Every structure is written in structure tokens, then in C-alpha cells.
Length: 104
Image 1 (cartoon, rainbow, N blue to C red):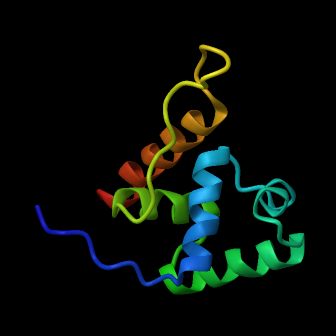
Image 2 (cartoon, one colour; image 1 turned 180 degrees about the vertical axis):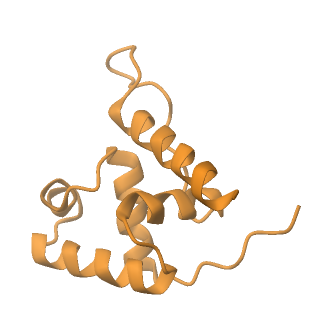
Image 3 (cartoon, rainbow, N blue to C red; image 1 turned 135 degrees about the vertical axis):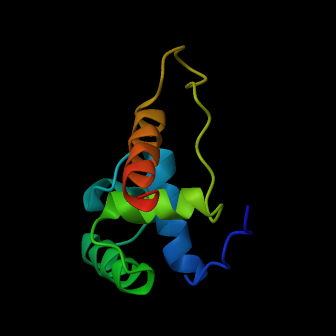
């Protein structure tokens, strides 16, 4: 197996991808609140991520970052309630997307 390529994203964009994986959403409003940014800034950062990574959607960006080890998946269970968190479902969906798209 080949080593993962180095991450081409600056830390600010990588932070957005990690926040999306942790929150289980790519919604600009939600991520803006978590990162203390404006919605406009988050949308602009998503556009930059798409350009740098050459992906067409936010799920693909998260999937690619997870697959290459640039970000980490959140823990599978919420500490407050013992059920699968939405972040885990989001990451699972991103991984399925990665397997469907990147393994062809």
C-alpha cells in the first residue's frame, strides 16, 4: 500500500474539514458557529477546498481527507447518550462515497 500523499490544504481549510467530520455535517451555518466564522467565510473556504482537492462536493472532500489520514474520524459513541452520533453516520457515508468513487 502506498503512503498517503501530503495534505495540500493550509491549516485553516483542514480545520474546516475536521470540524465537518466531528459535527457530522457540512452545513455552513452549523460549522460557522463551531469555528467562530461567518457563513460567507465557511462557504468560501469550501470553494477553496473543492479547487485544491479537485472534488465536486463536500462529502467527497471529507471522504478524501479521511481516506488519506489528513483528518480523523470522531469517536463512534456520544459520551452523554449511548447511541451512534450523527457525526459517525456522516463519516460512514463519506467513507462509502470514497469506496464507491475512488476505488473504480
